[in-house]
Length: 117
Ligand code: 5GP
Ligand code: ZN
Image 1 (cartoon, rainbow, N blue to C red):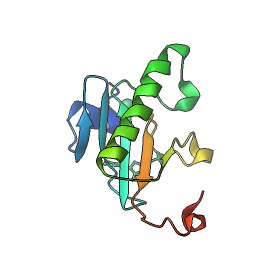
Image 2: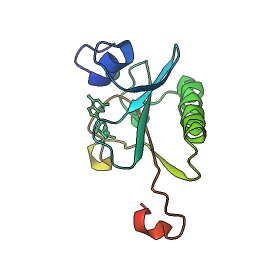
Image 3: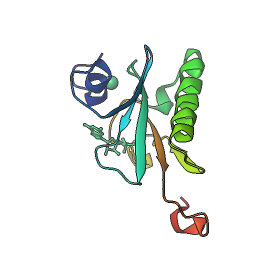
Image 4: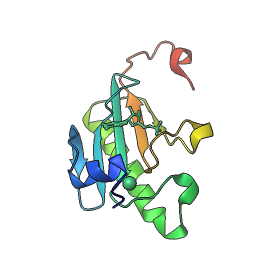
């Protein structure tokens, strides 16, 4: 727990969020400034700054983040979606606590080029 980290505070429930899922290791909550109709962040409760700081023993945690995002997407009936890790400032990362973006809900099967990264 890093006292100056907003996502550590969200993980501990010290800052409120719209929770989608929580267990002992992971929390998922709605992004406060959504970039898609469905925009959920999945985070480990452990403070890891980014993918760039991953250690080998984090592989299980990363798999759980991805699995949880997939489960939430399925529960919400998303047929397609994006899973994104921004890494570092040059990669668009603003919050230095690892988080997986789940983005979807556009409902545009006909023209995926419109929102392809
Ligand atoms: P990044 O650019 O670091 O990959 O993404 C950080 C995301 O966290 C952004 O999409 C931003 O809207 C979201 N965010 C920042 N502060 C808060 C907050 O206090 N609560 C929630 N729910 N989302 C936040
Ligand atoms: Zn943190």
